[in-house]
Image 1 (tube, rainbow, N blue to C red):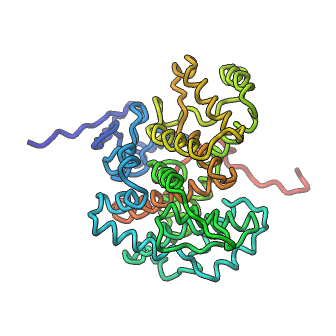
Image 2: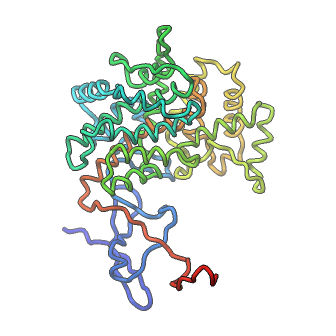
Image 3: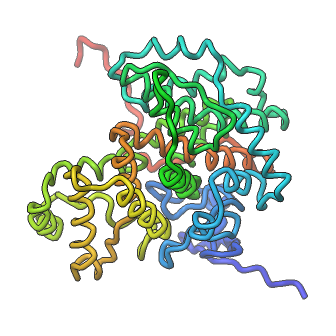
Length: 431
């Protein structure tokens, strides 16, 4: 028996138009308006595309009302608890969890590509020492196409694969180099005998003068931060990568575009903004004052790191991140760090306040990730670069998915034009 296709009827100026209704495996139905302009001569108006499906995808699903985040069907809390970042990378890239042999091969390929071209070291010296690490990452990742031009042919599946592995492998090295450059320390080369997260921590905090041992609790927390930020459906930076890719741009240029978009404080900069808020509060005794301000409708102040645009209930990533935050703070202690003391007390008071519970303004992943990174010793300027290296696999997975889409075409949003109608040019002496 063939399932009857659903349609919706649009009536405009006495004419009716049938719009197909597409049904996803999960989530709300979608009106197919691709032929609307050809049939009815009208566009739809949706600033921010918040009610528009720009593509179909099999990678990530979010149910904001239920607080669900699924990667290829697997809940994020299960992946964060039982898996690790490179296994999640494999899942996002290839669609299924790997066998032990497949995972070993994938981890080896990534590990063997973590070094960057030696001439890239000189590229860093073109930046001022006080440059923001994100500014450096946008430039360096975009320049990778000049160093790795043997993997820029987007029509070659093998070159797409090589570019994917290179980006996942080299992004932590580039982020660590950006950090080292801004603090005036020598670059630390990656090693093949330690895991992905430990390698990143070592490249950030080791110095040539002495050995550096990575604490396994910190490495596990770092790996969870990577995992919990790996992909988040069609957000602003992911949509930017897809839009750049739709023009046929090389993969390094597309990922650089995603990094540039992620830099915005409303997107990847949220955990940095959260820490800056905690520094503004300054001490535990001022928390009631700021909570009162957050409740005041006439005060523009709001608590950063609480609530989420997509999740209307709770952020499913936050529970796992809170566990890591507790482990890290227990390991490193917060007695001598007033910012972390403020964070812990603010979390406690906000969770006990009925106002925040009624409005479902719970601490989100940005709140806890900022606390962890601050405790580890990262400056706030490094928070967004760490987000970028975590999200790289999501961007690449979405980028690769586009090439298997038979409806793939260059992105070209429409507009509601409200400017002047046609008028004649006036010579300058007559104006």
